[in-house]
Image 1 (cartoon, rainbow, N blue to C red):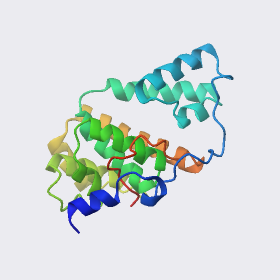
Image 2 (image 1 turned 45 degrees about the vertical axis):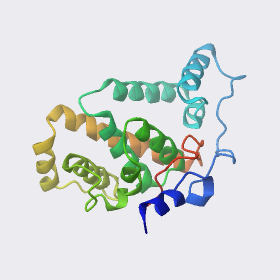
Image 3 (image 1 turned 60 degrees about the vertical axis):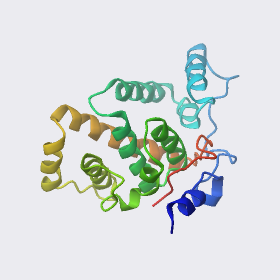
Image 4 (image 1 turned 90 degrees about the horizontal axis):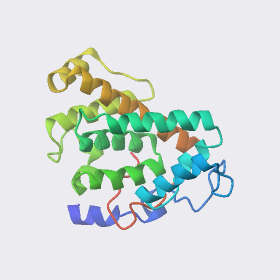
Length: 210
């Protein structure tokens, strides 16, 4: 199939590409603006400034404030960690979301990945990353690592880690590992609670479940 046809098929149009839109409520309702504390309203304001909406995973996590604080702290830590290229982190994260099947993560991940400069081919060919020429060797290694860490039973071999060491230093490996592990948390949390896509990738190419 020509790439243009694949792109047309995988433009984000809700259920047509296998992504549940959050028109149906998540299994646990998030904290509304009317219920929110002044501190949470500040979080919501920042989120709306960045994404144009209050994101459901944050609103739902706000049901347990201590966990929301930890969630936001880890997010801030990942954003502050800049030893790795931002597009590489988004690419590895997106690979995890397609494996877990998290509709929210695929939607927002595709949106962020595009903003970081990743191409439509790189979003569309994640399942063929080993043979696709859309990726650099460094990107392929990161994707292989994300895949190994996200399998039903984590299988990161010594051989894979030795190859990672040839491309990444130890600080970068810690950052990459944290990013992949965190996306596993986000994806499984959202998936279990029925948190769907918010439509950030509507009208654009969006990665789809594997």
